[in-house]
Structure formats: C-alpha cells, structure tokens
Image 1: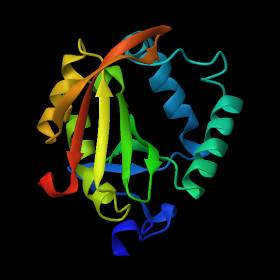
Image 2 (image 1 turned 90 degrees about the vertical axis):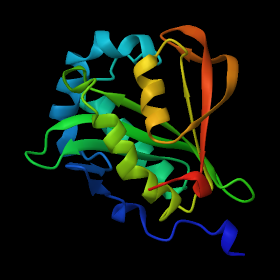
Image 3 (image 1 turned 180 degrees about the vertical axis):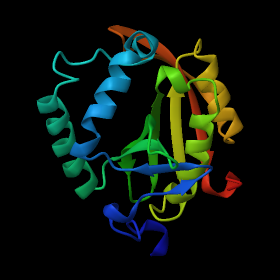
Length: 195
C-alpha cells in the first residue's frame, strides 16, 4: 500500500536547498565550524536544550555523534541536518527529524537550534520552509510534530510561521537543562502544508 512506503530516495540524497540555505547531513569536516558555533552559543542555547555531555564539543564526541547519526539514518529513525548559508558555506544552526514512526503513523518530530549570531534573523523559519517539502515528499511523512517550552516565544513564532498548529500542552515532557519542563505541542499535516 503506497500510504506506508519507506523514503523514496537514499539518505545521502537528502540535501534540500532554497532561501539561500543548504541543509545536509553533518560530516567530519564540519566539526571545527560546528564546535566553534556551539561553544560561542552555549549560554544562549542552554535554557532550551538537554545538558550537553562533557565531551560534546570534542572531535571524539563529534565522531561518536556522526556514527550514531549514520546508524539512525540507515534504520530510518532520525535524519539530522546542518543548516548552511549557500553563499560562503557558513553554518547557522541545525534541524533534526527524530522519532520517525512508520506504518499507520508516518510521522516524525523535529527539533532545531540556531547559533546566537544568527538568531532572530529568519534563518530557522527559512530552514524549516526548505526542509518540510522533503519531509512530506521524499521521506513520505503524513505528520510532522514539534514541541517547545512555553516561554520560548521565538521558537513558537517559527512553528506558527511555518503553518504548525498548537495542539496542546504536555506536562513535564522533556528534561531540558536538567529540569523536567512543560512543552507546547505542535503538529503539521501533509494536507495542511502549503509548501
């Protein structure tokens, strides 16, 4: 049945571009730029992310991350993307489609981060607008979900600008910065997407 088909292209082919951005899977060559941007943005990102492992910004930690990404992509569980400016190749942030469920669900959950120097400039809204056609097209999803802390107004704006609908509140949903936090739940259906 076509409704339950797997992705129509191999993971290596997933490199959507548009709005002056390129999204693609992380590579070892990205480590210096990734580590520098994450370190520079640490205080900015800390309130919105899980506690970072102690070796998170090391080359060995990044190599382990890439191995896990490769396993998750091969198993159709997760698809990580780094977000680059097309002109000049500067890294601005990242988006991950995680928790991919197939069968009668055909859904996944997105999470994203933006480097502090690029915040509040529309990059993440543009990145999601570039990525969503791939999620509904090549990855054959029916539904894309997202969650954010109720006080994260910029993240809420990104989701609303991209057409997501607020669907509810999950109490103590994720452990963020060491504390179980309530999250607003958002969803976007393929038929509601205006790509």
